[in-house]
Image (cartoon, rainbow, N blue to C red; front, side, top):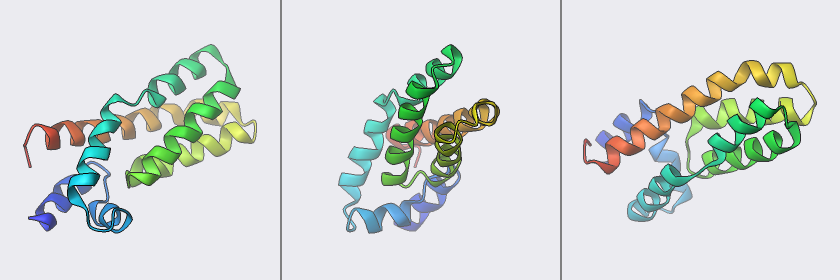
Length: 122
């Protein structure tokens, strides 16, 4: 069952095996924490800050999103938002703006996977 779940979640950029290592094998705790991400507003904050060209606020949102995605083993999102965060930190705002659609896409994919998991699709 866990292998099947891991395979399904992998398609959404979620590394279930890594998460189980982080959570010391506590699948219920991980599911509870992962589903809380559905109410996380860091992506919305990042997008809004980038739109306003408030790069300090964008960096804070990206950094927070990086931490959440890393802690929850959302590896595809983590990888791209880490690059976004680094670009913002280094003042490479044009590069950060170009990456934002990829961050949004990775976030949307994670959300789709979490919603499917929550709804019992797997």
